Amino acid sequence: MQARQNAQEDDEHDDDDEDDQDPSEDEIKEAQQVGLLFDAVGESLGWNMADIEEEDRPLTVDDLTAYLSNVVKENSVPQYADERVKMLDEYVKNGGKFEDFYSVQQERLSFDNLDMEDESNQKAVIRDLLKHEGYSDDQINKRIARYEDADMLVEESEDALDRLKSIRQRELEENAREQEEFARQEEERSKAFYKSVSDSINGLTDIRGISIPREDRKALFDYIFKVDKDGMSQYQKDFNANLTKNLIESAYFTMKADTIINGAKQQGETSAAEKLRKMLRHSSKNHTSYNADEKKQKSVVDLATGLF
Image (cartoon, rainbow, N blue to C red; front, top):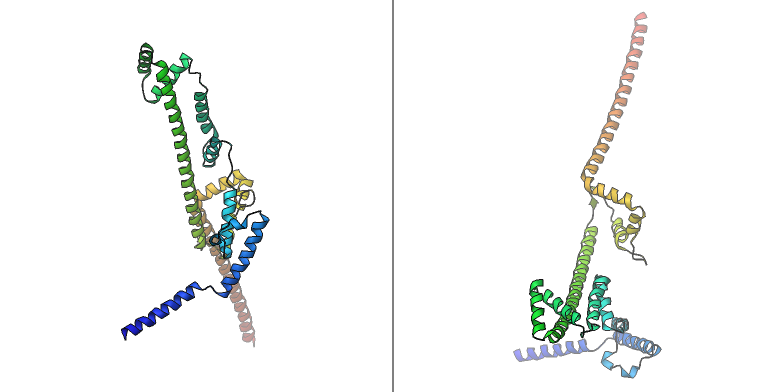
């Protein structure tokens, strides 16, 4: 009995596997249409379609989008005539200063162009290296003097030059890594800030007691973050339109917001209370006037009655 049940479960499992493996009619139709579009795009771009492996061909719209996106990304990588230009581009993109990069490269170039036959250059290179290693001027002078006495100045200067080049290259690479890490952290902070503001706006019901309609949430989000072709949001443009005034108002409201809101509430409450007092006074006056007229009328009636 157990064996029969196991066999039945195996058959059902095999049927499920076949269902998972067999594409539906819609999937087949999508694959055919995507394949035709892929071939048309490839031929129009001059690709050799025979070089594309069958397993690499997209079968779905998402596959096609991802394939074309990768092609664009690969073709968008700039080609540099010199590796140093690439390093400069990445360094500046990550927030580094051109001047800092250029000064290090200029120093390396000056090393390459140094006339090492000149004794003054030999001493200068040795001096730079020893200073970098923390030697004092007096210690450096003594060491250079010993190199001269031992007729080792040329050899030591050549070694110092090679070491200085390596040091400058490491400094440049380290600066590039630091800039890249700084850019990565800045991007993470920007994403965290964006998410924080987005979550706050989505859950917004009021601002310091002022009710915010639901339809204003998306409008507020777009006002802050949606940028135009120049990379400016409407909030930035409005704020920058009168920067001094808006800065002062924003700073003052941030500094005094609770006081301003409470004062406005008190003023509103005072106005409402004053309206109520006026209304009560008016009602009381009318009531008093009515009573006086009523008494006057009654007195005349009583007087007339008394005459008869």
